[in-house]
Image 1 (tube, rainbow, N blue to C red):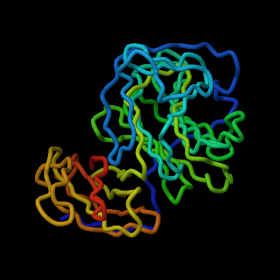
Image 2 (image 1 turned 180 degrees about the vertical axis):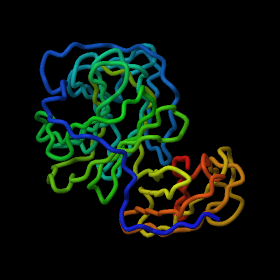
Image 3 (image 1 turned 90 degrees about the vertical axis):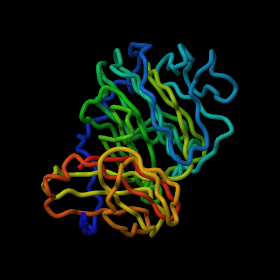
Image 4 (image 1 turned 60 degrees about the horizontal axis):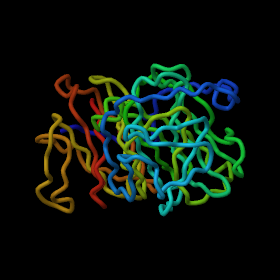
Length: 331
């Protein structure tokens, strides 16, 4: 059995380099609009979804309202027609600290473009985006706080360079009692989030946030928008097997017991206990153990050096208090 030891800190974030805001070209006027009309991979719908839109129709319709710029539906995909556009979803209200937004990005964007989750829309709002500066791939993310419906500024977070990705499925969520914004990227749209980035300091920015949600974009094409109410259970692994690795879980219920299992990728239905009937993405899983989350729903564990036979195996977590299942990660 895999033996895990709790650590004091969560250390799962991939490296990112903060850049001056002047290097974000979407904060400058008169940028060229590039429209993408490419196929998208189907994404993973969030557990606990309360609202979604696949955009499989001719026009945006009455469930969205244009707040700035213009969006349109072309070929059953949502397209940002101008720059720094955003639309608000009508009828869905979620406290910013509970909002989890997911969507699919177009692959290999043709030029400057981004897609953003807008959360906490009120007097202020949070604007969290993944961006391509020159086309071909996405190489930047932005954690922004829009103050009093003015310019999007870096009151917390900022503009960062990341490991380039070609596209995929994106999940944007809040953790740590409303203080940390998370971006998880599943480049292959296969349910495995390979990239995790986060920025803390929302509470220190004293945001005057509301409960509105929406989508932001610049020359962007996206699909399969999904809104969840409540933090998603997220698992990440730092380190390389067979060396010791750190397994981090966020988005669990406060002080919940979290089960961590590992094995070959596949499917397994839990046969008994409080989560009977819950399906996980591991065939014939081995239970690593049950571990307590802290008051913020976070858990971080470290392994000893691992047997080589475990390398490449799939790891997944289950919150035993509500049977939420995390994404998978690979040792």
